[in-house]
Image 1 (tube, rainbow, N blue to C red):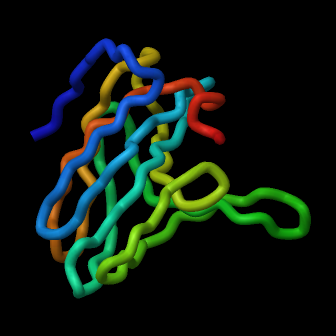
Image 2 (cartoon, rainbow, N blue to C red):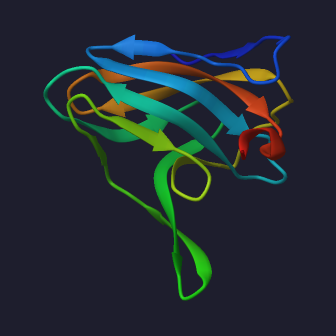
Length: 141
């Protein structure tokens, strides 16, 4: 089931934490879009001993793809990645300049709106994540 939830937050950054079959997702936040595209950032912790893979993402507010940014020849580039391994006992951080979920053709998003995103894992299955929309400046340390 897909849904969008809108909440008002008192704190400056919302922290949603979801767990499923040993996978915990926390600190989910979406950069407030300046145009038709934006990105989702979060942390994945695998509390099991066996690895799992993030193989996709979906939401009703946009087309979602797992991407990574990298620097080559002094320029930033971005590419789609088919999967991201999260080893047993490891934490993988999705952050600006690195791994992220790219959101294309975003519906209108408002500051502090909470968007539900399903992260698809090979073993754990779908993990529902609630991500607050925040200005990019509030995301980048």
